[in-house]
Image (cartoon, rainbow, N blue to C red; front, side):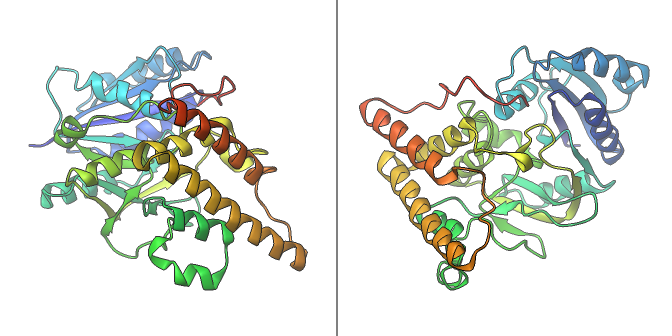
Length: 335
């Protein structure tokens, strides 16, 4: 029987994380394995609160033994999940699969089984992810193509004729109606073969937040392990509870760092600067149209200016020495 390690990362949302654990345990019924909750050094009593509740509810002694671990540092999404993955199963044995679930995501009773069955039935697939929807059932776009220069232009110009012309390069593609192959999936509910992680490595911890799943899926695809979107696996997701993305007044430094690191790492400095210029040109044309139409742009303040300034500064620095997103802004958000 295949064994599954489930990892849930917490940052200062202990009550919600416990609800995610409860939903996951119900969906894990009949599946061999264990669940680990990683507290990303919240510093607010989250670790103690969750550890006490897990013991009080007897989850640490259940068929899916739950452990609460302290990572000791807030290294971001990838680093926190890596900590849980490296912890492995309680008995020291290796899992066959790893499943990462956001602390504000709640799988339907058959959601995890659907992912496991899919990977078991498709041995050449590396990763499998869920259909994600909001608490009210509204679908979330979580299936994507890999970012590219043309994709950046299309995304920022937001003009129907251009989108139709560049349809093959749209990053946030229309949500698939059935199970299908995609480039990459959001990490809110993602199952991975342990053997693939052994081959390609875990999350790149130089990404603090965002683009880490993109990079991991790309590495898997290049190694011959594609990613599948499994429509039958349904997971409710609140979204942005820890990151505050929905209320950003300005694009944070860590997002800009992660975006640039993805492009430089995977395509080189020249391509990264080309992607930024494509975003600038597309965004400028869109804004010009909005001025004529007298509409609000809706983006965080200074979005294009911040992206260009960041891209130029980091790009010039990368020409002198290899770029590393490990040296992130000191003003990181707390996840």
